[in-house]
Length: 235
Image (tube, helix red, strand yellow):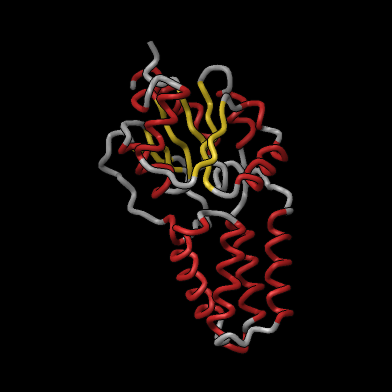
C-alpha cells in the first residue's frame, strides 16, 4: 500500500501569483500618504494594522483594504481626505479583479498528480476571491476537494486529510509559507513540502523545520512529481 495517498496544495504564491499585487498596492498606498512619512514608515504602520486585524477580518484583500483605511486615518490624525479613502477603495477593487498569473509548472504538475492521488486545494482568504481565482486558473476540475479556511493549523490539516484521504500520516501539504503550509502539516503528522516564493508576506515567515524527518524543500513545482513518487514508494 502506498505511503502517500493525499496531497494538499496552497493556492496563493504556490499555484499563482498573489503577494506581488499586495506589494504594488502598498506602494500606491504609500504614495497617497507621502506627505505623512516615507514608504518604509507607512508600510510598517500598515503591517501593524494588518497583524492586529487578522483576528477580526481574517486573511485576504478585504481585510487588507480595511487596514489601509485604518492606517490612513491613524497617520493623518483623522485628517485623511475623502478622495484618498476613495483611492484606497478603488485599489482594493482592482486587486479583487486582477487576472491570475499561474506560477511555473503549476498546471502541468497538478495534471500529472491528478487521478493518482487525492488532491485538495487548501487556502486562506476571502471566499469569493479565492473561488474567482480558482475558476480563472482552469485547474478547479483537477482537485477532488477545495477547502477555504480561516486559518491553517495542525488541527485544520488533521481534519481535512482525514476527511478527504487516509489521515495526515499518508498526506503532504505543498506551499510557499513555512508558517501556514509546512510547519502545521508536519505537526499534524504529514509531510511538509516548502516551495519558496520570492515574495512572502512578513506575517507568514517562520523558521524552516530542517530537523523534521518529513520536511522537504524544492526549488519549484516542477520538482514535485519525482519527490512525490519517491515518498509514495519509500515513505
